[in-house]
Image 1 (cartoon, rainbow, N blue to C red):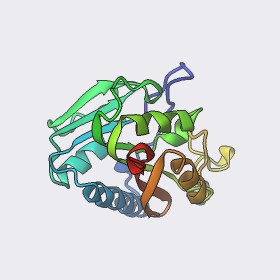
Image 2 (tube, one colour; image 1 turned 135 degrees about the horizontal axis):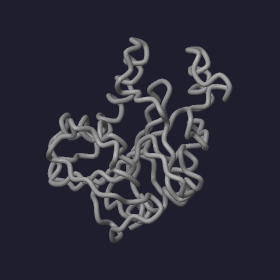
Image 3 (cartoon, rainbow, N blue to C red; image 1 turned 45 degrees about the vertical axis):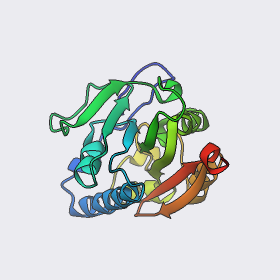
Image 4 (cartoon, helix red, strand yellow; image 1 turned 90 degrees about the vertical axis):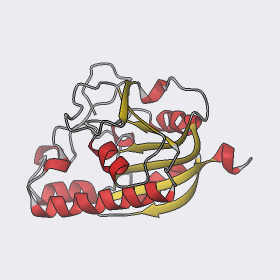
Length: 210
């Protein structure tokens, strides 16, 4: 996620976890990517429309579109596209948009992906409500699992003055806390816990109650 002065925008961290050379970090990220990809596949993206909110460099988007049946459309959004990777898969569309004010009609996308975003928000409930509003079938979420995330940062000597808190993380979700927040807008279908993350696949409650 990009850094902006506007409090309605999301402040991101300064370390690209996807590019780490540390073998343990790479193993953990691989576990995270595998969990997210498996749940994305379970959402049956073949022929579906996909919106990713908070795409950052676009590396997760590229991972997903290359490891599942290709959706009919994959739109990746963020508050800034300045950090988009030159290696972004050409099938992925991009658009500037804030999670707090997604410029789409209700149910505009079959699947909405929002990974590693809620922990950066001043008002994650508001962001989640927007995500759920524009999702027609499924929502795929993830956040770091606390306090494990900060403990692991401390163990590797990172962010010691901040007690292991990654810059830009202003919310700290345990697995139960993320599930409780997600349940306000979603019927939880699957929960994965690849160390040190929580990954959730859910169905918008408006659809579940239809």
